[in-house]
Length: 149
Length: 149
DNA sequence: CGTGTGGGTTGTAAAAAGCAACCCAGGTGG
DNA sequence: CCACCTGGGTTGCTTTTTACAACCCACACG
Image (cartoon, rainbow over all chains, first blue to last red):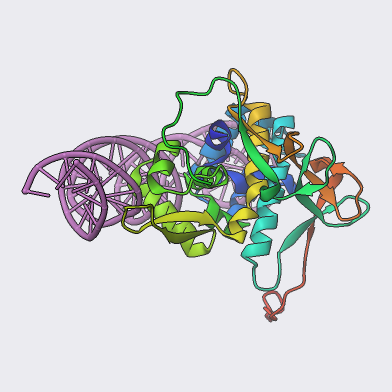
């Protein structure tokens, strides 16, 4: 998780990804959409490409020279639940006046998409209270003074 | 979503929340667990309290003066899918040598918990490719931006 | 009355973000 | 054939954030 945050946790990265999911691929479009500084955007795109979340691919519009755009890789695609979970939480607890500006729907069926937690035995949607953390593997030295429940 | 990131998007915030879900409540425990600077932690906790994600509640251990700890509010609890989605993505694409240090399981059943996307008509788990963004034009207050003559 | 402990607040240095200006290469128009 | 536009950046400088360490404070204990 710390590694995940090293890749996705910087200031504009999640917004870059969201725009990528919305279909934005080009530097200027991206910059207009999210409104961050150009050098920071360049840095974030480079970091994402370096980690394999985006791919920098050449394209050529008619009568133009070759330029580059950024596309989600499979690694990037799989970050979608993070985006949806964040949007959902924001819409629920920090609602924008007038409702959310955009929503994600099932292509074709048109119903709203949401993120939920499930266990591998199909026990239905879970909340944090239905779960517990389980430490694995080489646990470090025994912690002194365990917390009271 | 931008609002969500204003609350959760700062550098250590998500780790603070993760530790909160693991049961960490106190300043020093938190500081040891995530390893960030104390002033930054103090700032993050204050921000989270201010936004209603955590609550600062007094407690008193026997023979001690009153102190304060931080507990998840309902708003905080509902951020759990974000945490799980991030952990899952990190474990999948940036695996730690020796496997993930911890996993989240269904309390009782013990099976691993994961985040997934579903539509409201129970069409099963979705990927980003099964979805599309839908802009919502429903503006509550008349904003008359384009109709300016 | 000195020490320990939890929960912080300085103070200062290093890193990151923001902003505007500039660069570059190829295409277009005059 | 030169000026200018456009997409995709880079450079330089200023303002915010982070990081790290040191310190503070109120109480309990011995």
